[in-house]
Amino acid sequence: MEIVGRGFLARNLRVLEERHPDATVFAAGVSSTANTSLEDYAREAGLLYDVIRRCQADRRRLVYLSTASASMYGDGPSEEDGPVFPGSPFGRHKLALEAVLAASGVEFLVLRLAHAVGAHQRPHQLLPSFIRQIREGSLTVHRGAGRDLIDAADVVTIVDGLLRRGIGREVFNVASGFPVAAEDIVALLEDRLGATAEKTFVERPQRHDISTTKLLSALPEAAGLGFGPGYHREVVDRYLRSTGVLPHPDRTARQLTN
Image (cartoon, rainbow, N blue to C red; front, side, top):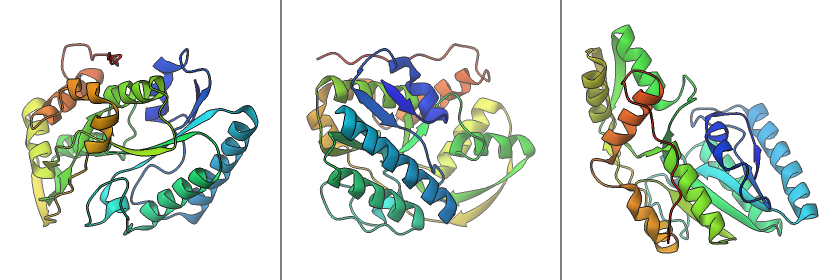
């Protein structure tokens, strides 16, 4: 597998480098929903165009990592085959690149990711940001804002499973399907870190439910990854183990079996 990118998801995907020799995964570009930089968007688009041309020439499958956040789906249903109305520049940018890929003629998969969590995360991402603020003693919490956490190792496992099945020209949400309130994530982190921060609450009652019906239909064995109401606690603990906060080593990605 060829992996385009050097960020945290690209680094997690390196466990698949010796597999799927005909596949390229595009794990580069803008990763923050708050980013509105036209220069950053143009840089990602230009890189994707180059990768598409190479995949056209070499007949390679191309996996594009997009977003299943509210930036893509807004307040509407988060179903891959329905219309979407992105409410931010980030979401509109990702949807535009999905359209370029779909029209390119290459064999592709678009994976719209929830909040992936794992080793090598950048400071601005959700869990590292919360942990830093808790340790500093104060943070702002969007009360009622749902966040669907998924272990990066499980993302890797799902990518592997979809490629092994030869599924192409499809868009899939990659999520647990079980959002959790931001204040509950903060409370769990405080418990694990043994620290309590002063909180400023901003009322943001937006529960964002990401549909996983299509994913589980195409890859039924993904149900064995443990998705459910308590899954986020496992994800948080695995992340804290990977960063040395908790004592036990993190697991590695599993291969799904039929």
